[in-house]
Image (cartoon, rainbow, N blue to C red):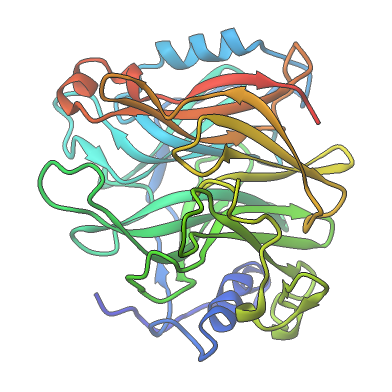
Length: 391
């Protein structure tokens, strides 16, 4: 489709959307991707159930067993199974979760959508539903969808702005579950008032369509720390390495409209050229395509499969700085193949949830190539929680 010219007003809204726009300019090196942005409606989304007010942060400390039990019993009509599940805390205490391919209950059309969003309050879980009952983040076009990779939350006046970084994915045809192609990255924003449903605001292309398997997947992880928003990218190198390298860019939150505020780490310093960004974690023994990077206490913690998506170990990389140097530790055995037609991938940390055991909560996506089995038992396609030592 042909993008429309951006209609972003010069207001506090722009102050939060401009980081994505500027990243577009900097990553392409030649200006806008397309001609602008897609605008979402401000009243098009609703919650499937009204959850009670969120408990105070840390006042409820569940166990991993309790969380897995809640997830296994969940029976939301528009969310039966999904992968990824990146999370962030809203200002009102609720948690927002974004997922990739999502299976719906039998009889609901479409039966599967490319993405979904849940909002939780304590152990109450509600689905964000679009009026048309499609994905919460619209497809690019038939056959090209947006898969969420990471999510961050920024405060703007009396609203939160939820920034979801997505990959534009061209689906394969037929029954080949691996027949998809990563084309580029988008930044999608939702605005949220206390206690209300997130409302889709803007979809902004970050990088142009590129068929190369070796492009940088910007937005594979993101976080807000101090006065900056950090956007991480993963890159699959040519050669024999099984993992991906990790790169990082950032912008000052206070002046994102200033193009000069965007910087990329080149191994020694922050500088303005994204093409000079250097890996902060090498591909040899490196990370998955999608991962999480968070500030946990006084340290920055990356959680990912070691040796990429096909690896068998969940690892943590810790550093006193968002650019490293990083110390890697193996945290959990998690083989990619977990049974006949079953696989586990994309571990993500959720430090905003305090566990009774005091460890760090991680989720691991699970799925099966047997679509009939998934429809019969959606729990085989739901993430599973685990607890690992806090760095």
